[in-house]
Image: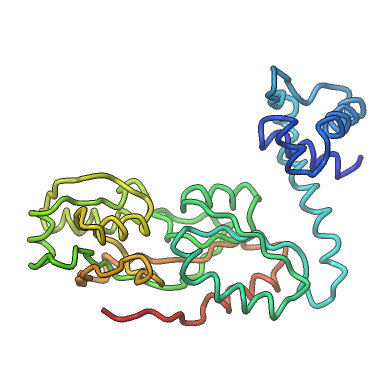
Length: 292
């Protein structure tokens, strides 16, 4: 069975159409269709349900998908296994937005210098979404907010940095954080996001009920809205915040309980252990962070 054909099947399942899969695979739609048909002949049952321009997996196909993904992944790892130093192969790294613009660029420079035969693939997303991708085997590592639950034993977490909570306020605003939150519109870090719980906890502990202007799970956007005078925001002081906060006033919030912890999540038994060790070391290097 051709693993290339299995890869094309996954492209159809993940994209929802043969045409989109063809673009991903850099093939014609006819070629993708022929690959799927060849798999169906070999297996003896239908894999896709076609309706107009869309295609979705049959129940029989859904049952096969976990093993198909493993087969495709194992085939991709064959080339890296031939290198005795373990410094080759595709390393799939998920990262939240503040890691993408903060700590990850410098780490990638170090990683690619140390492992020029390796190929990092960066997948952006929220902490919750990246955690699910890691569990599903679609990522090798994820840089996320520390999950608000006990990790399964199949995963490993390494703390990369702790980010204290700060109040961002327009440059002309004056007063203590609690006063500003009670008097100005509040651009809220989405409380349903893993990182949003720290700001919510501080407000609850201080019995502060600000007037919420909007909810966002995008810290860069919160900082820019505050800089434009739209209100105030409670955010962790991530690496690189200064690039987005502009002329905002940045007032510290005291208390270790309100610090956001950023972790590197990996499988306890990873496919590319040497590459992951290099990534962990690179991420552990301090990044510049301007003091308020």
